[in-house]
Length: 584
Image 1 (cartoon, one colour):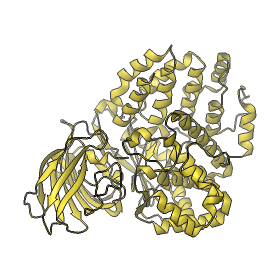
Image 2 (cartoon, helix red, strand yellow; image 1 turned 180 degrees about the horizontal axis):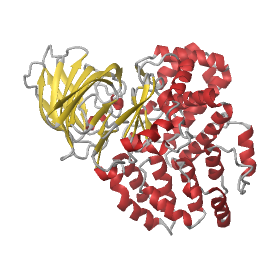
Image 3 (cartoon, rainbow, N blue to C red; image 1 turned 60 degrees about the vertical axis):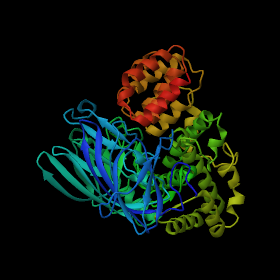
Image 4 (cartoon, rainbow, N blue to C red; image 1 turned 135 degrees about the vertical axis):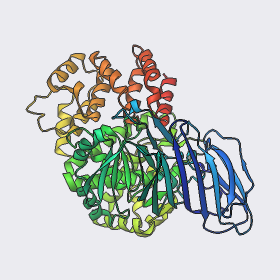
């Protein structure tokens, strides 16, 4: 018996799933999916087959001919959920599990009409990363086993179901509609994704469209109108786009992430709609995942940097191609700030600040941070600096071609790199990035004339003329670099001159509110209270609840706001905020 992924019951001695046929009926009244999952295995093998589940009610398990198969659902473990062990007779390659999801399935969020932009219809969406697919489908929930799938969702006829897959057809049956989808490329289970709601599409280009609630559609289409330029820039850097379409779904405000790279249908937070396209670097990040993550995948959460470090590197190369090196450098500086904050956050758990982690007994959601993103980026930048851009670009293309539609470990990456770029890992001290905590002193630092100008302005009130061409990224850095002892009157002057409290750019607004709250500037409190009721993105919830909870004056307010708004947040976000408040 061998379990190569510490977050899955999958046993490497058992057969692997090849395809999934999934049928589900969406029940908004009970907040359940009534479903059946048919798994076809790569080969027949008599004996036990272990599947991952979480809070699923298993009704029966049958073979391809409808004959019952013996099974046992084990008691749940805190992180893994429950092992579903099915005993397979000789010659069986296919089994079907009939089941119901829990109303509190960790991958699903059910929204009432009042929690949507239109206010008339309910909304449902999934979020399966890292190990939440098992709360929706009983399967081998590990990224090392990629599957093709066909799916049908039965929903109220007034609503639209969309999936991160290729649309096949819609059928209407009385008061319900059935939407059929197919994913012809093999994907890891965390990329299973769907949403159901009042949704409308608008074409953006020959390979892309945006979906949103009708009330948000025009604003979303305008904000993301440049996506085809991004797609062409990415292909010029990394090779052909293998997923046919790059559609976007604008999510409800409770979506916990900036974006989720579900192939063919990237999910995006509505906080990106700033009115000036200033936050579309998140779109570049999710697009980059089409190569680094979706095409080439980490084998488990212990190798997460292989997804995110490569994707941040690719994202900044796309930004550089579209907007120039100065913009890429500003984003790299913001990334370094986020990395330093994450290192501080994990200072009592330094083993989680190495890129190659060991996570037996650790919930991947609790280990999640910017470290694999930004430390991984610095590692790859160091490699690029060591061998030169041309050589590194060739290496990157060979890497993507070698592991296309596969998953790999850090150890496999090391072996590949030693073959392709002999000596470079020793030259950049790869061990310091991969195996040791913190960031090597020799790590690359972003440099640009605009960054130098920002450093000179630190702690001042710049004139309107001096700051007239600053990008939102520059304002964010300026605010994050605010000295800890800056006087409250400085914040009053800044807000009078630049109206930060009314900013539509969520990144700038949150940087402003965090700095102003730390300085004890009273007018920031009211806007913080309102904002925490408007969004569910963890990137904003955590620092704002964190700064409130760290203050004796505002600790009770933080708990009161979470009591008021917590049910609006996604379960993953609620868990993160609860952890912050428990430590206050």
